[in-house]
Length: 362
Length: 69
View 1 (cartoon, rainbow over the protein chains, first blue to last red):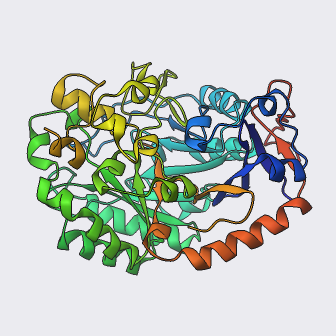
View 2: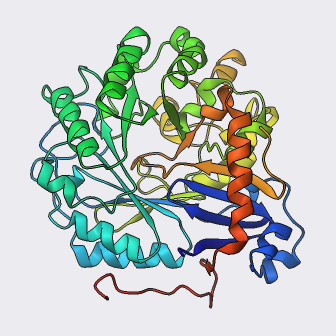
């Protein structure tokens, strides 16, 4: 019987039940499972699991900076002549991540499928008790290659429709990749970056298309000004205020079609009201440097993949000014996306300027 | 969202994205009752499972080699 992977916390413990279920349980329930919280349980329990969890649940690991696609919105500025990180270095990083008590490791790049050791990397993550997942554009995927990727709990394929931010062959290759992975019985999600030309009817059409191909989940991502996307074009590609206002309704239409995941940076744009529900479902806003960590292709730690070199973003939300300080969902949202704040205002330590509540306050 | 007794939070899915942390939000849109029953059954089965404690200094962070039989 597969053991439960358990990490004691001041509130009780995080418990990994299976690849798709991570539970936060209270002290009494953790004790019934045989967990001894030791010194952590000698402290008073923190009311909110969001406040109490300050170590990574999930770590993002870049295994390569190589990618020939040349997407104009690439947040990592990946290149066709980029380098792979050596297997031994990735394996050592995974050992450290596992020992720290993370549960999930998400591999990215560049295009991770171009790394010749990717199947071995996934196997190493599994051997360390981590749940490995990966995101791909589909470059380098074949039916034979897919069979070697079955250690991954899920593979997400990037598909933003036919947009100016992606490369010309992107949509065709992404859809072929979905078909190949479904054929190989590997759970497939689809990453969709929300840009001005996509949000609305084109997004619903894209959802219908990938669901028909066998994708089981949509991962919606905010367009973030980092890497090649940190340009003047950002202002033309980001969502309009009217699109942001309509976003909750659009998401509801997508949820009626399939399972939907939102990224941390979308939390402020969806104007959630009930923080209790967000906490119950472990919805996470900017957890950079806390519940989320990243390791770049050179082995350097970062609070998130978009913030190389930043070290102190985790502390910012506690001292964020109004309107964040009195916002009902502050504990989850954590003042929005630092990447957007840095690009638009020159200061990563400022409220997210695209948040509807922040806009309304100005 | 009604969670089983003793459960503070449920994080669904493996989180398959390499750039930003993601959260499944289906249950914010009206399927919470069915999910509550599913999670209650999961929680009821937990005491039958062995545990591996991780993330603690001196904890049982066993690190087998993937090449071992």
